[in-house]
Each structure stands twice: as structure tokens, then as C-alpha cells.
Image: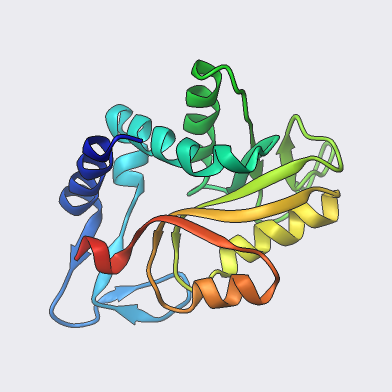
Length: 183
């Protein structure tokens, strides 16, 4: 990814997604209160923002040659679709997939949706990593499906223990940005 595009993405995140307060007022999914909140849906639900994230994340994952990429719904979904589109434009298609928080209660009762086969190499995606629990839930579902998880790839690492928790499971974490770079 060109440095100019990375800088443009960083500016978009700072402008639209990053919220900063004097006191810890933002409740995170972990239940912890924080002075910082990163709402990347403000970027991924925007055509330009999703394209920039798709391009940047594709550049991050492509060297690992995944067959597919995806993660826990909803944060990872637009990222996976953007990577799929950008990868196809580069003649190197990477399939998207979605991991539900729980297996579907009807039909095929799947927890993972996508055109996947056991044994395929997958990149687990996250918009923002804090503790790593969402990523690890997706990793667990992928492994149970028989997929080989090659890493967790995030747009933002909040630097609050997620990397360590993910790496304890023998999985590397790669991120486009650390929160400290965006403050």
C-alpha cells in the first residue's frame, strides 16, 4: 500500500472513528471503561473507507497466501468483502467468510458461512483488537471447522493485552495501526 493511502486511512480513522474523552467513559465489549473508542464501522460502511481498508488489509495478508479471510461478525464482515474485491482485482482472489457468534439455530446450523473446505489456510480478521477475545472465538470456530489459521489481522491494535492473549494461543497478530500511532 502506498504510504499516501495509509496516511489517508489514518486521517479517516482519526476524523471519523477515534473518540477520545478526558475520563474513561466508553464501555468496551470487554466491559472495561476506556478514554478511547475506535468505531471502525464509521470507515468500513463508507465506500472510500472500506476500499482503503480493503487495499491495506489485502497488502497485509497477501504475503501469507491465505485461501480465505474472515472473522467474527459484524466487525470483520466488510473488511473480508473488501479484501475479496481488492484481491480479485489483483488476480489473486481470496475468499471471504463470516463467523457467527453462535451456530445458526436452523437450516444447516453453521457457525461459519463461506465457500470453505477443511484444510484451507485462513486469515482471521478483526477491526479492533483489545483483549483478543473476539478474534480467539473466531479462531476456535475456524479450527473446529478444520481450517488452518495463519494469523489474526487487525486494522487497529489497542495495545491492551490482545496481542499477548492471541500469541499465547500460538497465533501471530498483525495490525495496520497501533492505537498509540493514532492518538
